[in-house]
Amino acid sequence: MADHLAKDNWTDIERVQRMAKTYTMRYDSVFWETLFSLTNSEPKHVVADFGCGPGLFLVDIANRFNAHTAIALDESSQMLAVAETNLKGLAKLKSIEIRLVNFDTDKIDIESSSIDFAFSGFMLHEVANPRKFVSVVHRLVKLGGTYVVYDYVSGNEEKFVKAMVKNGISEEHARKRYPHMCKHSAADIKEILETSGFSNCQSQIIDEFRAVAVGLKR
Ligand SMILES: C[S@@+](CC[C@H](N)C(=O)[O-])C[C@H]1O[C@@H](n2cnc3c(N)ncnc32)[C@H](O)[C@@H]1O
Image 1 (tube, rainbow, N blue to C red):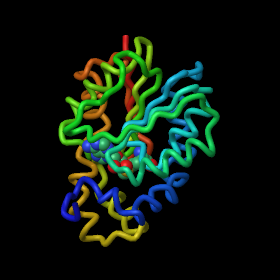
Image 2 (image 1 turned 90 degrees about the horizontal axis):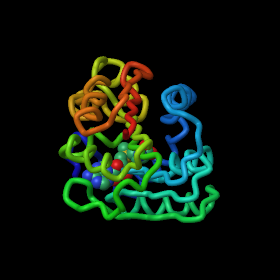
Image 3 (image 1 turned 90 degrees about the vertical axis):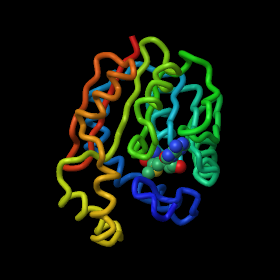
Image 4 (image 1 turned 135 degrees about the horizontal axis):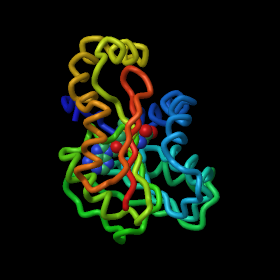
């Protein structure tokens, strides 16, 4: 996977640890303010993170929304092992579901219309067919439920490259990865949610290379 420019090798334990270590920097106060400005604060009983990585967002959102069930989905068993430990240790839940699944090739074995709050963070640019994937998420979300996508977006290559270099990636590699990691604009992500069946879609730019998009299932 070394030459896959949209995604890293997420089975590599160092990269798994880096994802966990950089969580608070990536999910900073601007992100949370944006998320809460776009979603309501009603309790959400079942929360699911598609591409959960180390599961730290799922912990925070489950606690915040008083969820009783958290569903962690990822194709990396290494990520899921860390997510399971974090969910067991840090979240107050009745049920934790850990699902090893590749969204590009596998059927997601979850009951239709069963999720109150679905989320994908820094993941949508990695799936082979975002529209097909988001249509599946739409089927799994309950009527009245929400799907939130948080991802890198296009528009400012220089700022993206600068941020990647700060994280230890070479400038040359960051430039190569920009069209793959920032392949969607905020408007593109909103449009993907709309054409996949979500209503009342909104997107908000967080900074030069990050945005949050939200859709409701009606
Ligand atoms: C950049 S990491 C982000 C992890 C987490 N959402 C976070 O922000 O901390 C992307 C995650 O998506 C998962 N992923 C990427 N493509 C996937 C696919 N096709 N099916 C399932 N999981 C996938 C990876 O294994 C990885 O854990």
